[in-house]
Image (cartoon, helix red, strand yellow):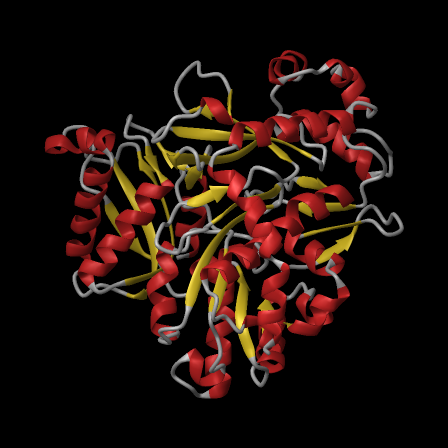
Length: 497
């Protein structure tokens, strides 16, 4: 019997537990809130906000304000200095350096021992559980997993305390048994120089029986291309005949899907999206035929959602509606209380609660009332690429508020893997698809009165990686902001183009 078949049976009890997500979401989330406030009531934050008196959600909201990183930053810094019982019981030794922004200013997200166990690792375990449930013929544990991570460094020189990419924290703390079925070595996995790391991973992994991949699509693609260069092969399954699944997250997969299809032509290849952020693990694609993910409701995270309309107030899970754009608010066992994470989602169903990531609260273009979100951009680009035979590696877009002719438009800076034969046709196709996807954008484009047709500027090869490298953010979980309501990022890139 294969090792995978033996391990598969271990997950059977969890499959039964996951069935609660189909019909019992409200009860599960009320249980989580009670558990979190009970554990947090003796912390400094819990005492200040009367967690000991919290009986239900209304009490929690009455006593606890909404928080951005700025509101919690002082407490987090004290925790980083070694103080105990501030936002979560005990001393928190690990801090994920957030890659949610490419500003010079970094955020340091606490990762407690409880959070590692009941928030981050549970997500990874459930990803495997759901994959094995959906693919009973899997042999993934009969080979190795290539896990791509970032790096970490000392935290204020305190013994045993580190900061770094979440992926590096997970690799550092992973069960030693997992190291028997993964590549590369921990020493290579935690290198900070991405170009050196990519080369070493390729050399270490090329001759192994790799069956599964985990990581950010853009950086994983870079590693796989290096493996193809070294091997001289055309398709990845010629290097790894038993490759069968890529667990991906961190950035939307849409711009990279076609590149992976061309690289891995095996009909046995599967893809599974995960929603794992520095702040927690929130969603899993439980149905391969549905791009929406299932919201994970029995981890150490309590969710609230704020509709993206003026004057909206947060609602708990049982107050959401399908199709609306919500900013997500979380309370977790890492000490983030009513924390606005910065991501926006849309529910595609309730009972079970399934959603798509629609963008970031600060990653959109609404300079002229068009309300263009990242999900629109991803779908529009995928359509234009399909119609025009193009492939996109990276992109960013921002408004041009008024040019010399008093005209306004959206400007897209795009680095192509394969450029379209006709760039004007590509731009027109993208523009039409965006109007089809977004009625506000369509209204502003009507007869070119408010917005002119979008403009595409072709980026030179490697531009976005050069820009990230200049900020020390090449590799790991770092990513390029896709949409911006102002021009700071795109202008920095254009100067280098």
